[in-house]
Length: 193
Image (cartoon, rainbow, N blue to C red):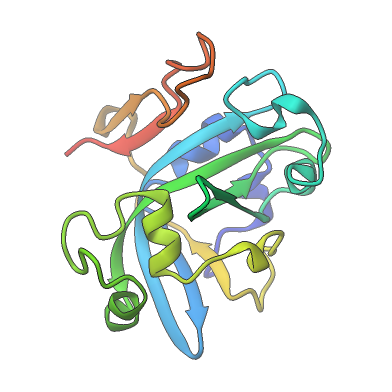
Protein backbone atom coordinates (compact mmCIF):
# COMPACT_ATOMS: atom_id res chain seq x y z
CA UNK A 1 0.00 0.00 0.00
CA UNK A 2 1.27 3.52 -0.77
CA UNK A 3 0.08 4.96 2.56
CA UNK A 4 0.16 3.87 6.20
CA UNK A 5 -2.67 1.54 7.12
CA UNK A 6 -4.87 1.69 10.20
CA UNK A 7 -2.93 -1.05 11.99
CA UNK A 8 0.10 1.28 12.05
CA UNK A 9 -1.91 3.78 14.13
CA UNK A 10 -3.67 1.22 16.35
CA UNK A 11 -0.79 1.32 18.81
CA UNK A 12 0.30 3.53 21.68
CA UNK A 13 1.11 7.11 20.69
CA UNK A 14 4.49 6.47 22.34
CA UNK A 15 5.29 3.96 19.56
CA UNK A 16 3.58 5.75 16.69
CA UNK A 17 5.24 9.14 17.35
CA UNK A 18 8.84 7.99 16.83
CA UNK A 19 7.83 5.63 14.03
CA UNK A 20 6.38 8.57 12.06
CA UNK A 21 9.82 10.18 11.78
CA UNK A 22 10.98 9.86 8.18
CA UNK A 23 7.47 9.17 6.88
CA UNK A 24 5.99 11.55 4.30
CA UNK A 25 2.92 13.64 5.07
CA UNK A 26 0.95 14.20 1.85
CA UNK A 27 -1.84 16.68 1.11
CA UNK A 28 -3.57 16.55 -2.27
CA UNK A 29 -4.91 20.02 -3.07
CA UNK A 30 -6.52 20.99 -6.37
CA UNK A 31 -4.54 18.36 -8.26
CA UNK A 32 -1.25 19.37 -6.61
CA UNK A 33 0.69 17.08 -4.31
CA UNK A 34 2.06 18.93 -1.27
CA UNK A 35 4.40 16.68 0.69
CA UNK A 36 7.08 16.77 3.35
CA UNK A 37 9.10 14.36 5.46
CA UNK A 38 8.00 14.29 9.11
CA UNK A 39 10.89 15.39 11.33
CA UNK A 40 9.26 16.12 14.69
CA UNK A 41 6.35 14.62 16.61
CA UNK A 42 4.85 14.61 20.10
CA UNK A 43 2.87 11.86 21.83
CA UNK A 44 -0.29 12.48 23.87
CA UNK A 45 -1.52 9.42 25.71
CA UNK A 46 -4.88 9.18 27.47
CA UNK A 47 -6.89 11.02 30.09
CA UNK A 48 -4.13 10.42 32.66
CA UNK A 49 -1.71 12.52 30.56
CA UNK A 50 -2.25 16.03 31.92
CA UNK A 51 -0.70 17.49 28.76
CA UNK A 52 -3.36 15.81 26.60
CA UNK A 53 -6.65 17.49 25.64
CA UNK A 54 -8.43 14.34 26.84
CA UNK A 55 -7.41 15.08 30.45
CA UNK A 56 -10.88 16.66 30.88
CA UNK A 57 -12.58 13.59 29.42
CA UNK A 58 -14.84 13.34 26.43
CA UNK A 59 -15.91 16.74 25.07
CA UNK A 60 -17.11 17.92 21.65
CA UNK A 61 -13.52 19.02 20.94
CA UNK A 62 -11.88 15.73 21.96
CA UNK A 63 -14.55 13.34 20.64
CA UNK A 64 -12.42 12.47 17.60
CA UNK A 65 -9.61 11.26 19.90
CA UNK A 66 -11.93 8.56 21.25
CA UNK A 67 -12.68 7.26 17.76
CA UNK A 68 -10.78 4.88 15.53
CA UNK A 69 -7.08 5.28 14.89
CA UNK A 70 -5.78 6.91 11.73
CA UNK A 71 -8.09 9.92 11.75
CA UNK A 72 -6.99 13.55 11.76
CA UNK A 73 -7.56 15.53 14.94
CA UNK A 74 -7.20 19.16 13.84
CA UNK A 75 -7.85 21.92 16.34
CA UNK A 76 -7.36 25.69 16.56
CA UNK A 77 -5.07 27.12 19.22
CA UNK A 78 -3.78 30.48 20.44
CA UNK A 79 -6.50 32.11 18.34
CA UNK A 80 -4.38 31.76 15.20
CA UNK A 81 -2.96 28.28 14.44
CA UNK A 82 -4.38 24.96 13.29
CA UNK A 83 -2.62 21.87 14.67
CA UNK A 84 -2.56 18.44 12.98
CA UNK A 85 -2.66 15.31 15.11
CA UNK A 86 -3.22 11.69 14.13
CA UNK A 87 -5.44 9.61 16.42
CA UNK A 88 -3.82 6.43 17.75
CA UNK A 89 -4.72 3.50 20.01
CA UNK A 90 -7.92 1.48 20.26
CA UNK A 91 -11.37 3.02 19.96
CA UNK A 92 -12.53 4.51 23.25
CA UNK A 93 -9.00 5.33 24.48
CA UNK A 94 -7.98 8.93 23.65
CA UNK A 95 -4.46 9.27 22.27
CA UNK A 96 -2.88 11.15 19.39
CA UNK A 97 0.40 12.24 17.85
CA UNK A 98 0.99 15.89 17.04
CA UNK A 99 2.91 16.38 13.80
CA UNK A 100 5.24 19.23 14.81
CA UNK A 101 7.46 19.71 11.76
CA UNK A 102 8.11 18.56 8.20
CA UNK A 103 10.83 19.06 5.59
CA UNK A 104 9.00 20.14 2.41
CA UNK A 105 9.68 17.92 -0.62
CA UNK A 106 6.92 18.42 -3.20
CA UNK A 107 4.57 21.24 -4.17
CA UNK A 108 7.03 23.89 -3.05
CA UNK A 109 5.57 26.63 -5.27
CA UNK A 110 2.09 26.10 -3.81
CA UNK A 111 3.49 25.94 -0.26
CA UNK A 112 5.32 29.22 -0.95
CA UNK A 113 2.02 30.80 -2.02
CA UNK A 114 0.26 29.49 1.10
CA UNK A 115 3.09 30.37 3.49
CA UNK A 116 5.22 33.14 1.94
CA UNK A 117 6.90 34.25 5.17
CA UNK A 118 10.19 32.39 5.64
CA UNK A 119 9.44 30.44 2.44
CA UNK A 120 12.09 27.87 1.58
CA UNK A 121 14.18 28.64 4.66
CA UNK A 122 15.11 26.32 7.54
CA UNK A 123 12.17 27.69 9.57
CA UNK A 124 9.52 27.43 6.85
CA UNK A 125 7.63 24.41 8.28
CA UNK A 126 9.45 23.78 11.57
CA UNK A 127 6.37 24.21 13.75
CA UNK A 128 2.87 22.71 13.83
CA UNK A 129 1.11 25.95 12.88
CA UNK A 130 3.60 26.60 10.09
CA UNK A 131 3.12 23.19 8.48
CA UNK A 132 -0.68 23.37 8.58
CA UNK A 133 -0.51 26.75 6.85
CA UNK A 134 1.90 25.44 4.19
CA UNK A 135 -0.38 22.44 3.53
CA UNK A 136 -3.62 24.45 3.78
CA UNK A 137 -5.04 22.32 6.62
CA UNK A 138 -7.86 23.62 8.80
CA UNK A 139 -10.73 22.55 11.04
CA UNK A 140 -12.85 21.53 8.08
CA UNK A 141 -10.55 18.52 7.78
CA UNK A 142 -10.96 17.47 11.43
CA UNK A 143 -11.98 13.80 11.53
CA UNK A 144 -10.65 13.06 8.05
CA UNK A 145 -9.70 9.37 7.65
CA UNK A 146 -6.01 9.29 6.68
CA UNK A 147 -6.37 5.58 5.87
CA UNK A 148 -9.20 5.93 3.34
CA UNK A 149 -8.12 5.22 -0.27
CA UNK A 150 -9.47 8.54 -1.61
CA UNK A 151 -8.33 10.72 1.30
CA UNK A 152 -6.73 14.06 0.34
CA UNK A 153 -4.48 13.73 3.41
CA UNK A 154 -2.39 10.64 4.19
CA UNK A 155 1.02 9.47 5.33
CA UNK A 156 3.41 7.38 3.26
CA UNK A 157 5.84 5.01 4.99
CA UNK A 158 9.46 5.93 5.53
CA UNK A 159 12.17 4.41 3.38
CA UNK A 160 13.75 3.16 6.59
CA UNK A 161 12.86 3.62 10.23
CA UNK A 162 14.72 6.11 12.40
CA UNK A 163 16.82 4.08 14.83
CA UNK A 164 16.54 4.96 18.53
CA UNK A 165 20.26 5.81 18.51
CA UNK A 166 19.57 8.41 15.79
CA UNK A 167 16.70 10.03 17.69
CA UNK A 168 16.49 12.87 20.21
CA UNK A 169 13.72 12.99 22.79
CA UNK A 170 12.69 15.90 24.95
CA UNK A 171 9.79 17.57 26.72
CA UNK A 172 6.75 18.53 24.71
CA UNK A 173 6.51 22.19 23.69
CA UNK A 174 4.09 24.76 25.13
CA UNK A 175 2.91 22.92 28.24
CA UNK A 176 3.76 25.79 30.59
CA UNK A 177 0.80 25.32 32.97
CA UNK A 178 0.90 21.51 33.00
CA UNK A 179 2.18 19.95 36.27
CA UNK A 180 5.10 17.56 36.52
CA UNK A 181 5.90 14.90 35.49
CA UNK A 182 3.74 15.65 32.42
CA UNK A 183 5.39 19.01 31.73
CA UNK A 184 8.87 17.50 31.34
CA UNK A 185 8.16 13.95 30.22
CA UNK A 186 10.30 13.29 27.09
CA UNK A 187 7.52 12.53 24.61
CA UNK A 188 8.79 14.78 21.80
CA UNK A 189 10.74 12.98 19.08
CA UNK A 190 13.04 14.21 16.33
CA UNK A 191 16.00 12.81 14.42
CA UNK A 192 19.49 13.56 15.68
CA UNK A 193 21.13 16.11 13.40
